[in-house]
Structures are given as structure tokens and as C-alpha cells.
Length: 54
Image (cartoon, rainbow, N blue to C red):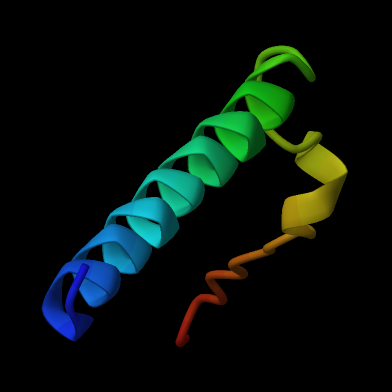
């Protein structure tokens, strides 16, 4: 095998490895359950006071 074939095989190996790692991370994050919205307390309280101008 010449140098070009070795580089092609190594590039193929690393691309497949990156794909498998990505799938594993996605599977782990998906298995944690559904994403729930934050509770209302996390947004804070916003009070808008409208005072009369007379």
C-alpha cells in the first residue's frame, strides 16, 4: 500500500469513529427522558405598575 491508501484508510477509520461516538452521545442524552420546561419561579416575577397621572 502506498502513502495515499494509508491516509485514505486512516481518514475512513476516524470518520467512522466520530460517527459512532456521536451516535453513542445521542443515545445517552436521549435515554435521560423528555425535556421538561423550567418551573414558573425560574422566570422571576415581573410587575408592571400603571400609575395615574392626575
